[in-house]
Amino acid sequence: MVQKNLELAVGAFVALGIAAFFMLALQVSDLTSLGDERGYQVTARFENIGGLRVRAPVTMGGVRIGRVVGIDLDPQTYEAVVTLSLDPRFDQIPTDSSASILTSGLLGEQYIGLEPGGMDSYLTEGSTLRLTQSALVLEKLIGRMLTNAPGD
Image (cartoon, rainbow, N blue to C red; front, side):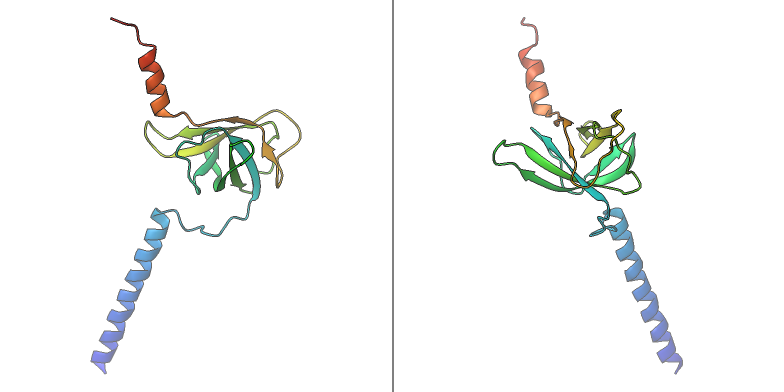
């Protein structure tokens, strides 16, 4: 009987450890909100999105207010159409706000930064951000610097 209780305790301890490890892995990989896109969706069009990926953060003033939920290509204009899911707590973002693709650090991940506009009307489900700034492609920037360098 004591042996059986000991085996049950060890089994419960191992199961608890596996569950804790699984939760830690989800937290570290930021998958805890998988399928949890309760926000309202807006779109933004960019000429070049660089290395932007689905699930990239959307920030305003350094605060995360949403994430990228879709990236498509418009076959008529050949622009990238990025769908953002914004937290419903942030429902007073002016319609003339601008979206820029930014990089955290020199070679870090890319994310979308929103700068608030000044209009009294606000983004709602299905709105489109008209003022956008595409990703800065490091290779193009270096190439421009090399071609504009003074000759010897």
